[in-house]
Image 1 (cartoon, rainbow, N blue to C red):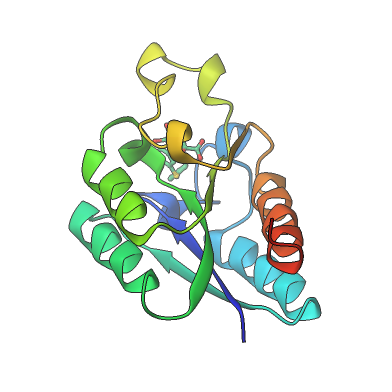
Image 2 (cartoon, helix red, strand yellow):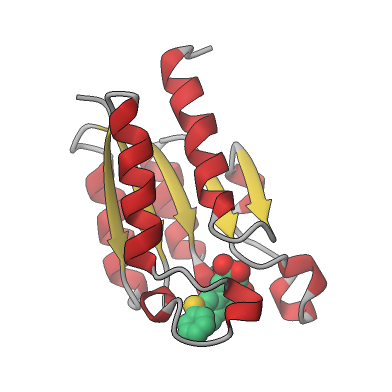
Length: 148
Ligand SMILES: O=C(O)[C@]1(O)C=C(c2cccc(Sc3ccccc3)c2)[C@@H](O)[C@H](O)C1
C-alpha cells in the first residue's frame, strides 16, 4: 500500500495544551487521526512520527527512504530555522515533501521568517492551523494519483 509519512518536530507533542491562539486547540493525536482517516479513504497508509530530538528526526527521514514511503509532510517546528541536518536527510532520500506550519511564521518573530526547508519543498503551507496538514495531504494524494 502506498505510504505517506507525517513528521512533527520538537514540542508539537504538547500541542493543544497551551497557546491555542497561536497553534490551535487540537492535539497532535487528533490531527494525526484526522489525517489517517483522510488517507485511508484514498487507500493510502499514513504514518506519523514526532520527536524532540534532531537526530531521531534525521533517522526517521532516512528510514523513509527504504520503508515504502512515497511522500513526506513535515512540520519541523523550531528545527525549521536551524536544521541543515534534517534538510540534508530529506535531500538524501529524495522524497517529495510539503512543509507545514500551524502559525504564520512570517507574521511572527524575525528569527522564524527563515526556513532551511522551504527551498527544497514542493510547497509551504503556514498560518492555517491544523487545516494546513489536511491541505498538504490533499496535495500529496493528488500527486501520488497523477505523478508527473
Ligand atoms: O507554526 C508552527 O507550526 C511552527 O513550526 C511551530 C513552532 C512551535 C514552537 C513551540 C511550540 C510548538 S508546539 C506547542 C504550542 C503550544 C504549547 C506547547 C507546544 C511549536 C515554532 O517553533 C515554529 O517557528 C513554527
